Amino acid sequence: MDGLFALNNHAKNMKDTITPRSDIVAVPLDQHGDLDYVELEAMGCRPDDVLDFSANINPYGPPPGVREAIAAAPIERYPDRETLALRRALSEQHSMPIEQIVAGNGAAELIWLATFAFIRPQDTIVVVGPTFGEYARCAALMGGRVQIVSAKAENDFIVSPEKIEQALKASHPRLAFICNPNNPTGTAIDPGLIAGWAAAHPATLFIIDEAYLDFTTGVTSTLQYRLPNILSLHSMTKTCAMAGLRLGYALGPQTIIDAISRARPPWSVNVVAQAAGLAALADTQHVRAAIGKLQQAKEELVDGLAGLGLSPVPSMTHYFLVDVGGGAQFRHRLLARRIQVRDCASFGLPAYARIAARRPEENAQLLAAIEKTGNEETICQPKS
Ligand SMILES: Cc1ncc(COP(=O)(O)O)c(C=O)c1O
Image (cartoon, rainbow, N blue to C red; front, side):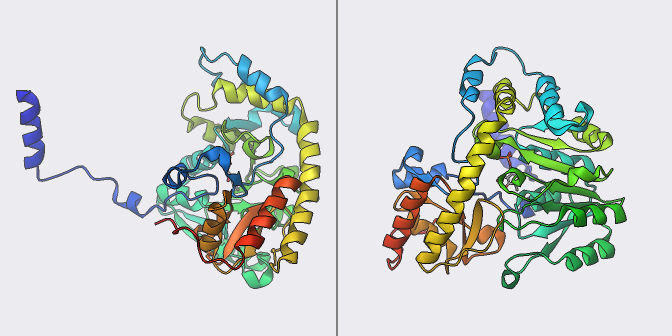
């Protein structure tokens, strides 16, 4: 006890206290869709009671074999650090050598690792926005200077290729992040254009986040151009409905993949995620069929919202933006009815909500709730 007392006393008397890196305080907090467990607890609400339109996940669930594979996963062993079986299956699916594939604990981890491996302090990073917040967060964490090229509401959030070209020419960035199709707008850039930019700027690494590519028809991957400075990110979390498991992968030139692999923490893709990923890849038909149904359900939801006087922004994905006047209030009114949408303030779009279509019967519940809350005042207080 005496020792402890002396230590406490010493700490009190110390002039210097430990403080974090000064630049870490400026890094924006992570803000995403999905359920906020603290908020739900404060509302006395269980996660299972909420119908979630705020995370852009395939609502038809994982392929049936996934749960069986999870139950049989050898959790008493460390996972294969090289994720060999999974990468072999991905190699077959994408017709790419295994050396050009790295798996991660969700696509999010690969965004972090790519910034870790490539960004040096003061490097310029171009981000095409408004978009997924992790690109700018990670770039800031690594000491990069983020330059955002933003699409405008008056153009239905279709980004101007000229603006991107100007930014690339003016700042010769170390990295350029393009989410294609984009979150939250659901718009897409012609991959041929991206390939042209990559060819013209060989010293820039183009990180093309294709997490939602499988949810579209007619948008193709930039990988087809096989350029030495394009990395393509994928999220099985989204397509295979395994958000709780976390699984993503990156495809690209071996030198880039090697660099990312060096930056990895060990065992980040656990045995359960590896087994689930393998089972999902053995049943791609399930996901294809689900996405076909989802595209139809999205069109019907858009029509339903238009019938309520709202104007969803055209998107190529199953999610879309809607100008609701105030995204936070709209979200809170719906959450009081146990339905969640994404308030888009963190994207710099406070007037908007992002809605990801679900199954037709669930979409009908959303439409009914919006109709009921239409003229109500906010029922519960917004989150502080
Ligand atoms: C564009 C985009 N990329 C990556 C991710 C992260 O994917 P994962 O859940 O596989 O880490 C998200 C999640 O919302 C996303 O929207």
